[in-house]
View 1 (cartoon, rainbow over the protein chains, first blue to last red):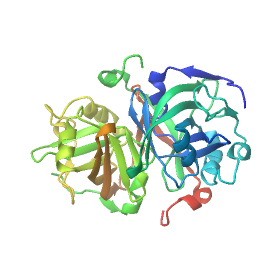
View 2: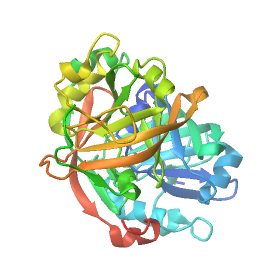
View 3: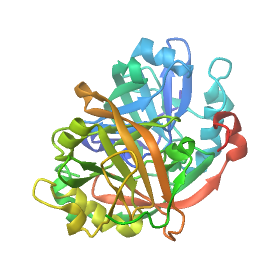
View 4: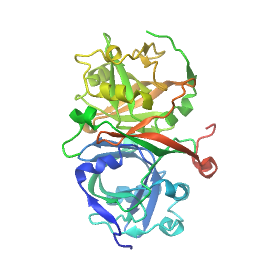
Length: 186
Length: 186
């Protein structure tokens, strides 16, 4: 496993800001035997604490490990990683070591067995706190989060769902207007 | 109520592509007496059919109407509407007619009493099919969707959650690589 590199721990109260814009994410698991990665676009912030939801189920090979271990890492890739992200999403951990195939570096997490991904902009260690079978929703609680400030490319990608992707564009600041709605310290 | 203007019905199988990238949305309701709007950033696609989830609860004035009528419209604003979107999100329907205050035009929907918003890029009529109280998740089924192709500004906005917003940037095409994962007809 690789070292932490330039990844620095971030305040857990800010971790929801990594997910709220709706980026495509990579989700890693470790079933006790091997690491795996899946590409997920169907996610949602559910609380500032932070709690996340994602839609997945047995159609994803990773789901068995997720259900068994109740752990995963959400890794946030940037636009320069798009083809790897699609590659990860279009093959199966059943017959592929995706870390090896896509030259991604697993980094030991602190609280979960699922690895962080060194090449990603941010990583979020998560516990599975509920699985809503009826709707294939997995509810995740963030345990720790890391951000690589040294990375030049910080633009994330957003799936449209038809095979096209939107890259982050301009950033607009409305902190003053939003003041009443934003948790303290952000 | 205004007319449909340039809004054209779109194939329901494509409606999930309006939501998958994670834009900030406006959600309208009608409680039998008056229209209201809320701004929501915590949403997720759950199926291609399409089914959506959003996180909301009694802290939003609209929630009572949503629970009572089991109907709403998801309206998708663009970057030129950002200040209206924030305005809608920082006052309450309890004491404000938001359509009037923010000069938005309600348009009669076909299947639900909640109105479409004429100024938005797209509108999605929805039925509430489940409310998962434990997690404040509302599950929505899309009944009809409309898109205003005549609009020049098509860039949506993505909340970071700290009072800043990301505007849609470049669009990248990976339809060939994604072919195995995309429903037919997209």
